[in-house]
Length: 436
Ligand code: GAP
Image (cartoon, rainbow, N blue to C red):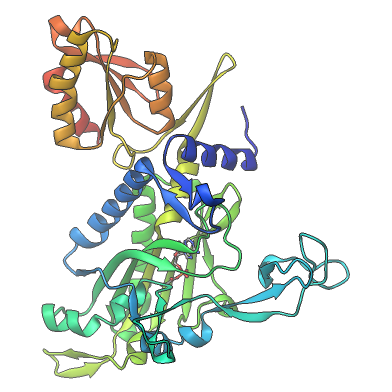
């Protein structure tokens, strides 16, 4: 059955709610626009994404230093980097319904003006709208107490550049990496977790000599593509966009967007920017090459990844429907390393204590201890359990039946092919490890 892209997105959003991946934020109070809550399976999926990223870009390398900086920073940080003056979007307002829209999201009508999508009123001329969330620190209500929730994790890295150099004495080129929340008061949050007001980023600031920036820009372009493929995003839907000067952030001399064909259109998934020496200069920071006795300001290559956009790109890549004589089987073809649950263990019948005990003690408990992401599922008949596990992307369902009691073997059913094979309980750990 062919879904339209709109239907596909509706199915993914509905699956996320029904099966416990992602819920609307503050839902019981009517929902909060641009805020989403990750539930049990969504957290597992996000953790697998973040762990894969951290392993690939930090742990497996010798030139990368991790950070987990505070979200709140002194307002001087954001004044120095130009975010207070420049981190804004042009916004137009409807005089009647008071809705606000990003100017670049509204088409120009045949009369040459922009009209409100709600009531067709003529929209106002654009005004700049700063997207940082301001807050007050402490009890004193003067301007010196103003702080901002960070709109990018990057600055938590730059302000710790000197501390990191002093602590680890890294030689150029080297990088600093961070995963964490960022906040933007988006005028029009939309498309599920694609554009939200609170989201997570995985960012690297890679410090290089000025004359080497092009080499490392190309290097990280390849590294990003390799990781995108490794986690299982559909490479046929990835496109690179050279961002024009007028569309680049104020700090960037070159940016490539990695776009993805989301069900709601081709849009930015990740960005790769050449930030020059803009940030270190803004903070008055420099680097001393001890061997050459030379003072300099390194230049920066910044690969920047959104965790939430990765979640949608993975779900859209993995969502599959199979028509078996009019009966639709929906499953998430996620890689075992990324799937929220690696395997589900079931006793064939839940009212047979000997099966339940065997499944629990000899199969579920040991696998749970080794792999963690193992589910116990004894709800409904076996067919229903398979359907449920397919829908959340569990690669293997393991069933303990009456034969197990005599042959110490279980049925392992494969999510993608539906094929089943008998595997000795003693070989299960190896069976899964080989395929992970
Ligand atoms: N430090 C550079 C930076 O923040 P960006 O292109 O504004 O650059 C980087 O953001 C990535 O963060 C984007 O490619 C996207 O994956 C994610 N991102 C940005 N704004 C977002 C939002 N409102 N909701 C969800 N993800 C967002």
